[in-house]
Length: 264
Image (cartoon, rainbow, N blue to C red; front, side, top):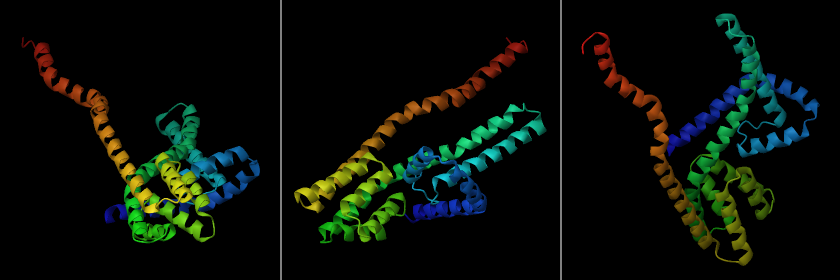
């Protein structure tokens, strides 16, 4: 667990370090971008940033500025290709367009990786929360124990945000709703729905959490089994592209060379 926490902290430090190097240019471009009045685009990018965790605390116009900087770098690469290897001039525009959309691909990848991490960590965090509640703590105190003793990662960060909102006076139901909206994962929505239902009906919260923990763990096992069953099928592509041609070369190349030299 310490190794995973170190990798997560190292990833955050690297992201902040890279962003700090281009922060002045990003802020200048963001100031100009804010004058374009792109309300629909801002709302769309805002949701994408929220679901990705928004590690750098970007606003939509800053994200657009990063895309613009990437496009300029792509055009420079295109100019290099044109000058050094006599590539067609359209490579300048092509490289710029590809680079412009690279930040979108990156943020989509971060979002999917974040959801996968949360899905894996959820049963463990729910076990800690269940033990805390069954030991006599209320829901907020149990969350505090999970945040303090849980494994570093996106789920613990989101639970910390949830706890801070509840401490600031936001109702538990609203804070849980915002928590589910930031993650946008079926397992989280099911977990939140069970908690709200338990509060509404007055059923013991510890029992509800234990049932949910068992369900989430079974879902994780089922997904792992499904991935294991799909592995042989996914291996067919690399085998066909790389392994089989090499085997054919090893088997048939000596025969072809014998024929060409009149050995048969």
